[in-house]
Image (cartoon, rainbow over all chains, first blue to last red; front, top):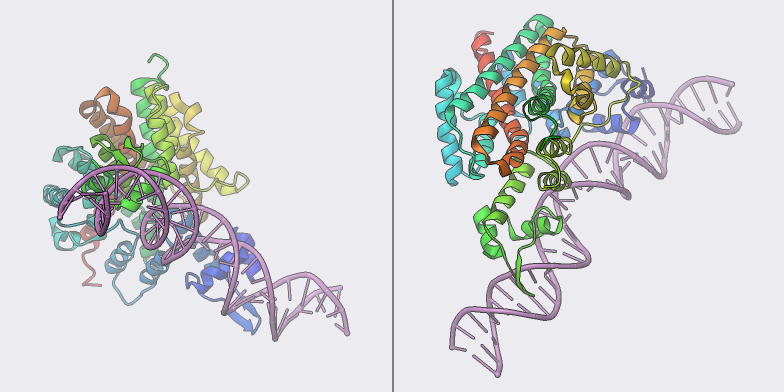
Length: 217
Length: 217
DNA sequence: CTCATTGGGAAGTGCCACTATCCAAACACC
DNA sequence: GGTGTTTGGATAGTGGCACTTCCCAATGAG
């Protein structure tokens, strides 16, 4: 198929597809001659994946390129590829290690990992960008005066572990060996907005359930 | 305290504080005279809140203004204020209702709300931005060929409801009546990045647990 | 032969979160 | 009382990002 058809079937403007091609998010089409290129179903699929990561997952273009680079890197074993792809995802600004709240958050996070028994990957986990994001978020909350006990954090972590188990079970049953890394990355990038939406809906519902709609206030 | 001290204690550059003042994210200080203004602890707290929303929660400046406007609107009852604040949060682009995947996602989402018994707020919930985000995320996944059964979605929803219960319990026990809306909004905005970080950590851990570190591949 | 269409590259656009510069009043210190 | 620094406030500029517009020459349909 030509660019125009690729654009039509994906809903992505031609100019934007050209931009993605230039940025290396999409492999060039098979060159028919100097002025014609042919694209196939795989291009369409990849384009939809890129679009979903950018528009639904809010992943920056440069990061998409990096993530896909890891996904496509057949030289690495699967877990490493998945880890590398996840680590490339956008992060929160670097925490200031001299800040007392940041140091406190480190302690709480380490204690949490200990309680969860996640220490088998601890050496890796404590340098993971996700760990950093966790510390930054916790430090911000504590700076605002919200001190919670480790039990609450543990409860949240157990819930999210439950979600991760669902993710990986899904990958296990629905993806071919070759597709597992891509599916897992999607699980990280596209399931997250879905979880966030469900979280907010649940908050609205639970809030309405507890307090009604405010008419008696 | 003066601007300089406010800047020092919050870690936010003076120029940025001025920008926030201009954008209406921060109330002006008490005017001492034509060339001096005085800020208090409440300004410091609000500034930290704004910073956390922008840097940790990735909320756009214009949206922060809108959210805070609802939080501060004493004329409305609490649940409405919370809902209004949550609804102002940034959204995914409007779904294309003519798209077959979007319509399919609507059906699945409606079925989900039915199964969860969240229909007491259904009339509200189905026009909520979170509902739209859910539909968009599900449509993107289905467009990529990932068809899952409603049971999985239900399991995710139950997990996130569990998180919402934790959120609101926390608000219940830790916030004064006046602070409840602010705390709940924070719960939505700052707990989310934390949940996301925990989700990714859990994925890394669970993946390592199942597949090892790839050395035998 | 004509003329719309193609893929590709360069440059431009619009938005956003700051950031730098300037200004005149006010204060701090001699 | 003079002098130099600091203050809050306004205006304009910066840099990054995700496109989008414009132009080109080659192609291909009628």
